[in-house]
Length: 620
Ligand code: SF4
Image 1: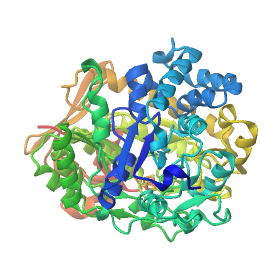
Image 2: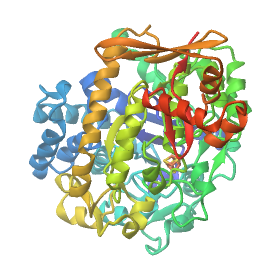
Image 3: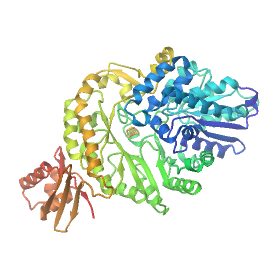
Image 4: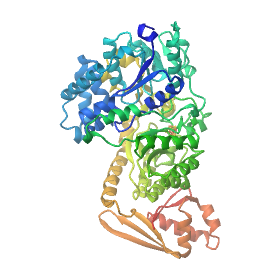
């Protein structure tokens, strides 16, 4: 594998090809660069955010629209990778872009020609021969673009050593990737820091060990293809070995753009790797959420200390003078959350944060998040039926989901979460429960309906029979992008299945419609951003006033006095009936039940399984 340039290895290149979000530097590149630089300061590490360059050239609006959908993104470079099959790629692009207003006037052939020009210019822009190693980070939407760039580079510089890694090159696919794409020399399974470090160390040895298959975490052509991916994982024991990511190259590139094309990027940071919820149920047959394959790159769960997270945020925002930060964790840490957010608040910076949280996140934690600048969260809501949530292994209930939706509304945190439709094995009861819960969710920021997709190595994929799936295979859309032989042999991240899909599509139709109505109505009622929540509550000490704003109708106002007020406030967090009755002992149980029923009938409270939740959002 070694060649002349490798023997004099003193610089490497790390490349991220289209289509990640253009407004953020690559956390993969930034973290790898900082890690390798700390261990090998004499090595020159250049990171290339080629996706930003492309976005600037084709226009941010079009780039963003394409980058939002895997099939749109992958189809463009597929047409360049396999010019003889460009018609199929175009057909997929057309199918997937129909209904997207911003892409209505986009002509596929013209766009791909333009993208080819920019990509070829990028390839010609460097003397790649000077780099002893080229590392490609291949995550969602980056497969065909990375393969195209690699193919073109290898054509001009056949001796280059190319190493790939990322979510789209999981260990399970590594032997086939190497078999299918001869231009790739090695595939990293799992996280890249240690394997890359070891490869570089080996290449700098004289003479290098020609058999790199002994490097843990790495697949090469010499690796035994039967070796299970997890067996070769090589990951850091603790994340405190990671310095703050180095995003200088991204910002330097941005500075070269003409002023009207510059913007204030969002800084990605990670506080953990893996998922503590998945770890918590690690001994069960199905671990973590049934649909999730977000953790293929990591074994177990590791998190940074609060001090390390805060120092990184402080350092990055100081260095790049921008205040938007995206916490990239699959799910934010549970244990040190309050500590992390309290310390971030002490930075005294008007940050704008984004993070992903579980639905069981308590109000005090959300409050601490809001206080330090959390403006937007993605919550693992996924369903509004407790029956379905059980099948999804979410470990949460519908009443918890409504509670966190209400809390976000109260704190002014934008909740951009999904509702999964058509999950295999879901039934009419799940749909009926969802439709009922949706009636109560209408005052809160609407969820986005997403149809279930099958992820490679997700629990559903691993145990399809348990979910009524007969057979799993590569998603047919890949057959538009890759030649038949590759489509049939390479395991792709997005899979498809044969099972109850026709039934699922039919039963979830009314939910789809209801969500679309909800989005429309919420937008209309909350047209003015200064408007009070749709269902709000003001406390008058001995009474409360609940105001219920309605779609194209006058608001309804309710007044609750004395014990009614107290019970309503007591249920601001969901309470079992037993606890309500044992708290208000002066009131007969049947009177309490009658009152609660009346509140539920008016959609002022939600109930399930003898638990009650007040829905009105307190306002001052
Ligand atoms: S969906 Fe989120 S909470 Fe569930 S297993 Fe995946 S990362 Fe963990």
